[in-house]
Image (cartoon, rainbow, N blue to C red):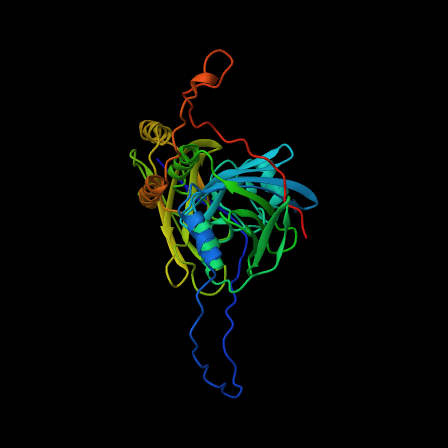
Length: 396
């Protein structure tokens, strides 16, 4: 029996996101700064921050203009900064989840083509959780909308900031490099809205989460499904695809492919991973697929190996051994970025569970006998999905 192998490689081209660090110059040395005692933050900022980080979370509803079209975003963020929600763009939708400082989306191919057209192969990310590229759409959930991040920004506020009217309520306007936050100018100093920085950036109306149990009921399953999430911000150059331990082996066939990270430039991003998807065929007949992923080394290299062990391969090889002849086979493979290892998911779920335990439970509803009975409200209520509005706060 003569078995010939040939390999073809498909390359994933992702979005290159380069980080630029600015260093010093060779000019004259500056005077050493004189340290001064910092004044205590105003009491209202402390109260506002405490309300954000010890409450039930924040519900955001906002609109951003993306590629000339209005896109609605409905998000619910826990006090610790995890989030779940949805983006709606006409008939197109994308689910959103944020955990441990990273935002992920899950959307169909039409959404990726419409709002992430710079990605060469959007079909590699459609229908699965993937790290959100910068273009979809322009906001950073944990660092801009997270209650802890907002409380930290408020703690740096000194004096009385400018005030304006938000739907009839006087509000302080606190400006940071990432966003403007509008806070009630009177107790309980609640967050009213957020205006993210940047052109066509979202404008969010904000309100406390009314049903935190519903938030975690949606958040946890989404986090559990993040293992192997793609990262379209990483780009790789593949080497030569090779076979090993395939000849006359009914147990499987191993393919190997080295790859080099080409983007982003500079230091390898923390946690960067390369994922391999390989398939083997014989004269156009599928014989099986395999997947694997590995971390990218400091020298920007990764070697990816996976073994096809399908019944199709076993039956095909058994037939080849029983009937000597020519049985050519070939492999094709693609390399793409991976944002999260399967092994890291349990730790994220533990984090979500800790967040859920820390959120105060809403006060139980006391039944009103006069209002009970036919046509009256029921004394037993459950936390159902929240109804989100899409009203955006007006600009000053």
